[in-house]
Length: 144
Image (cartoon, rainbow, N blue to C red; front, side, top):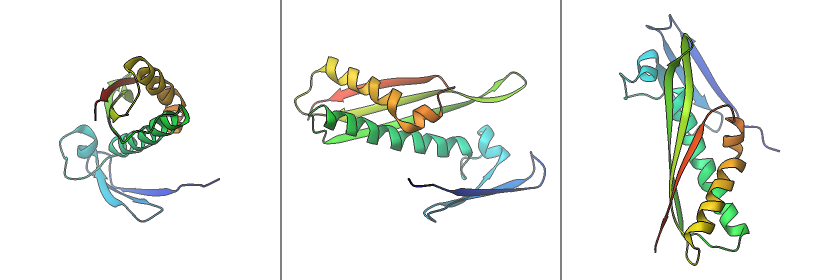
């Protein structure tokens, strides 16, 4: 199986230092900082934003695959992941993650769609990796 890689380097103190991340594929390389994690600086990224991107991408693929396996052919699956980075127990924690997905799936009824969407949430590899986090799903079936 594939092994995915990324690197990160931090220089300086926690609050005044700066970090730099690079994906192994070379598709993304960027800076991050204390201020970008705490919400003051949105001009650069942070680890939670990258987790959100990974979760949204993985869940969209997992839902598409689950729908296909059940005999449905989705024309579109769009997911937004909201990763909350909040104070907890004298530190910070990621909790919860809210997945909001909108899918166009011809020929499926609402109940079946919700069942498959929830199952995809449980079986998405990123969801499994983040199992310690409360992952909430709002799945919307949109008519074509």
